[in-house]
Length: 90
Image (cartoon, rainbow, N blue to C red; front, side, top):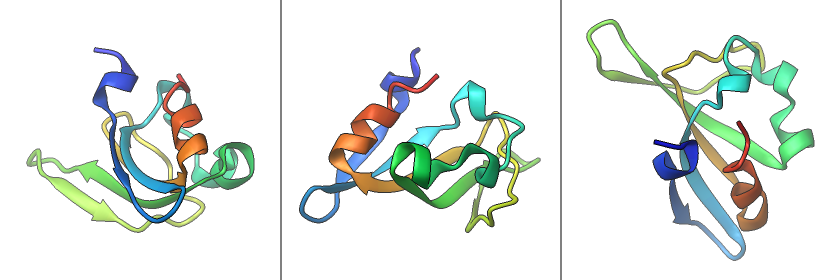
């Protein structure tokens, strides 16, 4: 299954959307600061849903130093255009 098939998007306010996406493989092991989500992609990370040892999701409001893990899901907010572009990042 491709990353694009795993993304859920909800319209938010005029021209903006929230999306839940799995962490792109190229982001794993990097901090949010290192990835520069807002300046490079025009989206903000509102929350990370992280798998715990007992296979439940923990909700985290991340700091810039948060290191992304392979099983994380990102809750993003951004303009519809930027969300659509972000969906194609690998």
